[in-house]
Length: 294
Image 1: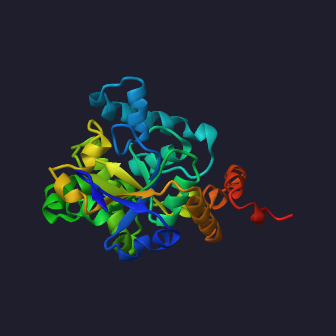
Image 2: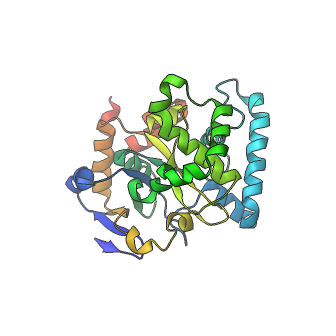
């Protein structure tokens, strides 16, 4: 393994290495397959859109609220399916992310193999998978810090009572998720802080369910995602908890991994339910045409 300033690099050079990579991981790890980013490790769709139009970062928080409001106002024109509570910001952001609107959310998955497929199915110059230990990066101490909640209890109680996210009998089971919803709302509307949280809406869409997906949520979008991730001079410690996994650029290895993932039922047809996902899965089947039948 080689270390950079704030992440470790691991190279996968064989199918056995690929299949056993997660065996030694301790903690709550999540994964992401992505194309290389120039100059930054992670970039959200909101960051990318702002950069393309030379939008000042200091304006992003206000613009994000306007984007959410615009999406919320017109959503019913295009869909008659599930409608979140008006002020459930995280649910609305998840819907926006699902349909391709620019958001602060970054897609990750609990499955190393799903992330690997999303990286390897794309043709490119490099196949990179990221692994991140949310027990360290999530700053769960903020979520569970009693002093924090005591200090802000009146605001959070008002929000919780108004939004009715949980039934009384389910409150014990859903409390951590509710706290994250409230925390996301707080960071967006009251007091942005540079941190990253692992979050998920209560209602999962078909892709989130199929991909074992979740989102990483940066607390202050006037700063880049990378800056939120490595706040408080933690870069020195971060490389034990963030790993860049590079799959050796060998065609046979790529084919072998994709074939094994196909046999695990991990392909575009299952990860992107619908005709388009199935059609896209046929491209990868060219790597092992014997599975197409006669």
